[in-house]
Amino acid sequence: MTSISPCQEPIRVGVVGLSASGGWAATAHVPALAGLDGYELRALSASSDESARAAGERYGVPLTFSSAEELARCEEVDLVVVTVRVPQHLELIRPVIEAGKMVFSEWPLGADLAQAEELADLADRRGLLTAVGLQARSAPPLRYLRDLVAEGYAGRVLSTSMLGSGGGWGATYDDSHGYLLDVRSGATLLSIPFGHSVDALAMVLGEFREVSAHIENLRPEVTHVTSGAVAATSAEDQIAVTGLLESGAMAALHFRGGTSRATQFHWEINGTEGDLVVKANQAQWWSGRLRLYGARGSDGTLTELPVPVRYERSLTQWTGRSAEPAYNIVHQYALLREQITRRLAPDTDGVPDFPHAVRRHRMLEQVRDAARTGRKVTL
Image (tube, rainbow, N blue to C red; front, side, top):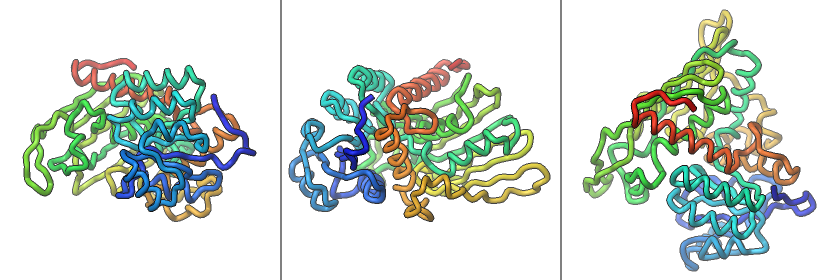
């Protein structure tokens, strides 16, 4: 595994996909890197020299490139962060690996399992440190939740249920999200909202042992939000998964495309001694403010459980900012910095790497197989 020594700090970062017009990199990664010691946003690449220069001027990034290959070859970059759409991941991450650079890819790693396996194998052969943006694992409320479960707050966990909305994959679409209509893009309700959510569930409660599933496309035609044009879509908009966790607890997850007037995200954990609940008011709950509730023993009603300050890892400047998209990302970068400078192997307390992403991609393929065959699948 590649690493740099503490004397080489700060870690010099190059971002693939940072645009002057905004987007996820600008909203989350730029503020996170600016608000955390030990990193320097040194370079970026965009689709053209002109767009790269515009982004560099807007965000104060000194080195700009028109391709990921050029950025990866830059000697002033230690870590390359890939924030583009999923269909481009393979072609843009491959040259970063070939250049021998540490790489952080947003989730999903690839458009399918085969692409994820290819990238993980290439990185492994080069002995590179890799990371994947499953940032719910870094969220202080979920790390606290994991510890509450492990410490027996709810007793023996009997069941868990999760209800969520996709945000996208609803009745309408716009120009910037038209690619979501094609299931072959790899950017689906299953891979993104469900993928982030089931990974968080596994972090807190353990992996699945077996699953049954229904995956449906109940809106085969959707409407453009401004023009009213009708387009065909092959992507699913309903996912229902039930199964058993390795612990023996039962699990049920239902994700709907679009948004709900009633519930955007609700997650319950029910045990022999108590109950725990996670709520969010936004569909992309893994990048926004979470509220944690609990009750046990003789408690008659749920009460909110404040997250102890120790879970913010001394990032006091981020206290009270959990509603910002950068909040979970900055905690992910803090964990990654420890792995890089201290040569730590990824584990359940660190940032997921490419092999972890392959395992999650494989699980999602097994869920899709269960839905296609109508049979229970053992994982």
